[in-house]
Length: 190
Ligand SMILES: C[S@@+](CC[C@H](N)C(=O)[O-])C[C@H]1O[C@@H](n2cnc3c(N)ncnc32)[C@H](O)[C@@H]1O
Image 1 (cartoon, protein in one colour):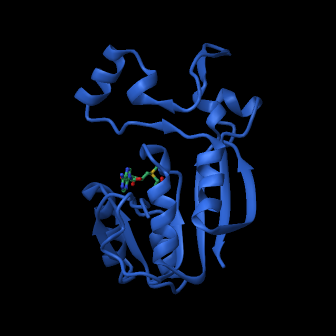
Image 2 (tube, protein in one colour; image 1 turned 90 degrees about the vertical axis):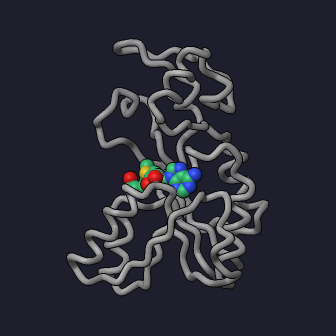
């Protein structure tokens, strides 16, 4: 889910999975189509918004793999509920999340300042002129969700979290010196 771009889908398909890539970007889906054709992977692609997985029947997947993309959704509740619905019993949701603290910070050369309140939202946290610029440039808006919405939301939808780890940019960013920016969780529909 929201995993276009030719990264996760082709790897899973090469390992033998029957893969459907669902993403709202035609460009991202084209990357999966290109690799699927090149390596004869038979990946199915569907364009749509992650908040509505209505094109899929109940209990139709063994695994939903969601890379760090719920940052582009304003409301997480329908997303976790939809993931739960489309998974078979004992199905797995692997998701990448963003540490909400990273959205509270503004970087100034080699230092950080606490600037934004939680939850962060491009829509409500940015000055109007910055938001207008993002919209004018057709950039995807970002939402820095609380841990309650990211982890508690999965639990409320019915998932049991069976694994969890934090991760870094890989020394590419100053923030790596201070804290891990990413979280991965594995939830089971039990
Ligand atoms: C950071 S990329 C992650 C996927 C990519 N395979 C990767 O590993 O980098 C975020 C993906 O979410 C998709 N996306 C953003 N908003 C979405 C939405 N509302 N519904 C579905 N997909 C969305 C983007 O098109 C993009 O492919």
